[in-house]
Image 1 (cartoon, one colour):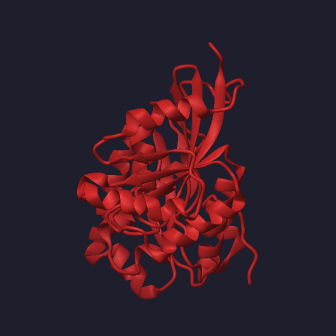
Image 2 (spheres, rainbow, N blue to C red):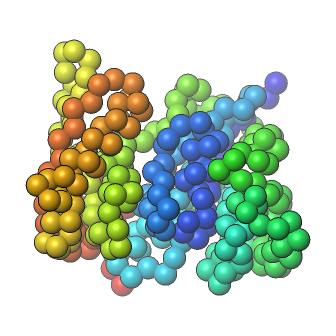
Length: 299
């Protein structure tokens, strides 16, 4: 049997279901998920072995019109992920349909003349009659090698897509140990799990104004780990919301994040959170690099 290995970047507009798809395909919670758009901020690698093929799935931030330096870095990370991959999967929310944002992304992928597949997601929520016109509209913008209709949430259609992906990977040796799930450092994973709870437990602009950095990681003799993380927010009002009355909100965020981390790391976790106001953190190159983003130039 021929050994194969390659990168497949999952790209699309915010809330298309990219992180849900990565987690479903790898069978692990590698990329954080929330009902809110623009949750993912940097590329996340998922390592999947199917037969003799190692498929390196790259979950990218949603592509949107950037305003802040953080936004520009996120969008740059998405396009870099697509450019560096052996092929790209354009994931489209079939329920939302072919929006202007989706058309713009498809057009740019078409202009790049690189290998790209079309994946219509959430097809379980859409009448079948709507899917073919949607496909036709998008294939006029890019030369998709393959088209798949799937549900990342239920798993429908994913077996055929994975089998086709495995066969499409270039011949070559596996780049990672087959039992690895990701190359994401544990410190960054811990920060992301805390940030996921901020998205799930706060509302409006608060999650978007927050970033999390793991400040200290201490391995303990009993096999547990002590993690200290700082949540930076842009405004004093957001700090108050995150802390909550008598510290109730930050305690709840910490408790749920700690439980998730214990499951992911398969050991006891002692998690300590601190909240600090830092106006303009989303324009600081050092903060962007700390959360796994290459600093995007201003302008």
